[in-house]
Length: 117
Image 1: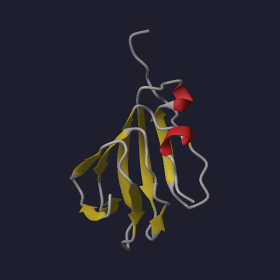
Image 2: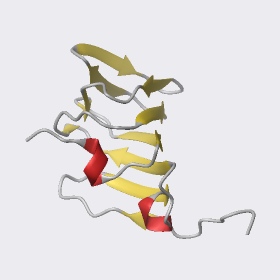
Image 3: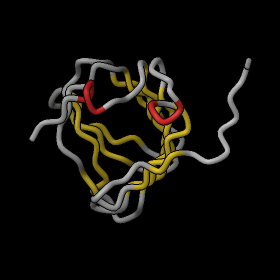
Image 4: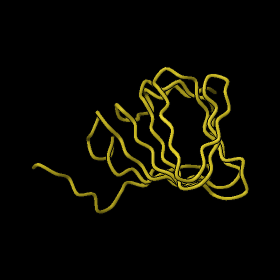
């Protein structure tokens, strides 16, 4: 089949209040690419990681990225490409929820994200 139409994205179970809707990735058998729509609540953060994939993020709202010791705020309408092998932490220390899309090449997996404890 020359296309895949996603009608019901996979909702990744989380315990931190973040909504992750995977449209393409492990849930669809794709290993080369993952695409997810996310909603991070105000005050949300996650541990540092050192992923084996490039990550492109396009924001609808404001979000904070810490990449190899540098803090970068990406605002609505902006995007960022974080290269694989970078030590990165994603957070939303702001007062409003942050909606964004994330694309990972190759696809995100728990085995290749390398989250710190």
